[in-house]
Length: 302
Image (cartoon, rainbow, N blue to C red; front, side, top):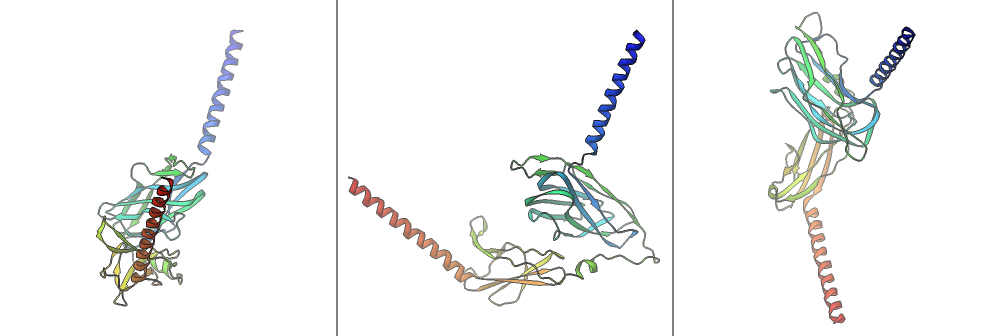
């Protein structure tokens, strides 16, 4: 009797253990949010330029923000560029910024529509192979992803680093350069953009400046150029301090993508300033009328 009871207990324990194992496997099998790298380039040699895609997978939950840093072997790899033109994130609180001296790439990106799915493109990294060996591309600390749930719930995704094998340069294999293939098919200019004229006590000592940002969905924006009153174009970044603080000139900003395509936007600073001043004057007039009406109303009430 005791033997039969022990057998039953043993059977129950085995069944329970089997269920626990099954549920554990199922939980692991269920895809969670994760980030990883992918590259189709093979046989990388010293001197090659090649691309690595940084991707995110979130098949079960909608996410809208990603925040983190990527570390790479600074002795063996050098970042030449980061391309966000095909990214699912269109809002960059911190545009992907790299430091080849430290081997770090940092970013904060967001999307207003949310993303739920597999193989979402975050951005493309263009690396130069500097030295032979095993070069690791990894993540610094915890990379944060926020859910598109209206509450900003934070999620720590699974992280999958990448190791890149770099061999010494060989005359038997041609050098690889990803750039021609990236820009060859780009015949489209950057998208139209707006120039914003501003003045702020905390920026440029309360002097007039302009802000601008263009999007290019093919090869990406390479640089901007600014011309004041038809003068020579000068390479510039946003925000840009105006030389003409009297606002008498027309300002032109040229956005140039990596294939050399251009998009030009223009703003008449004088007209824009007049418009701003007119709105200010109108506001003062309306305020004065309101005060007069209130005073008359009070007198009648008395």
